[in-house]
Amino acid sequence: MPPSAPAEPASYGDRPDEWLVERCRESAPERNEGNEAAFAELVRRYRGPVFRLAVSILGQEFAPEAEDVAQDVMVRVHHALHSFRGEANFGSWIYRIAFNQTLNLKAHVRYRAPHLSDQALATTPSQDRGPDNQLQDERRRRAVLACVGELPEVYQSALRLHYWVQA
Image (cartoon, rainbow, N blue to C red; front, side, top):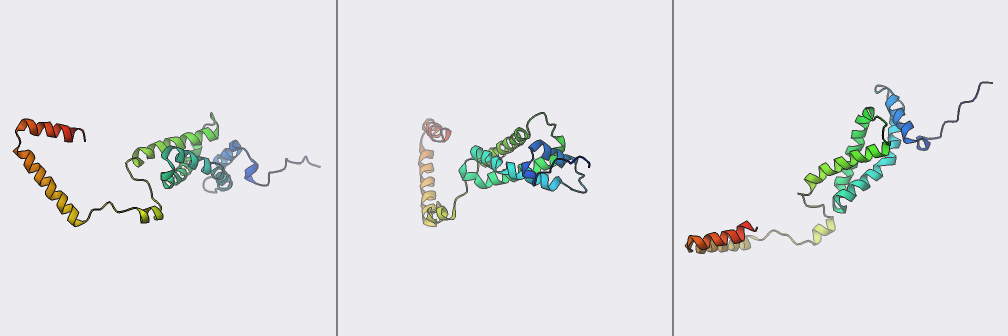
């Protein structure tokens, strides 16, 4: 009787990351054999932790952006698996990609307002002032500027420095 081969695990879930990465890298791209199931297992293992890392950096109010980061990281990992040298743990490598991707996004996100739920939007009063208030504000602004324009230049400069430089 020929020696029996070690039993294959029932699923890729029992395999270590290194084996899954090698399986993804060994499969021919045109056949995509093994690659899909092995990569799906890597995504299953790391999508949640990558999302949580992104939320911890961006904040809870930017959870939709954190979802985008998690997806982008998985796409980047898929395209860059061939460049993974194995010098570091696969988890460390993917977390570094996620960290960098999140910091890149954070540089842009901090200038945007966070997403609000439908309930929050329904209960939040509008910041838009009505046309009557806008007209009143514009008339007040013009009157103040006219009064400031009548002051001597020294006082005008003092007012500009006090109100506009500190703003």
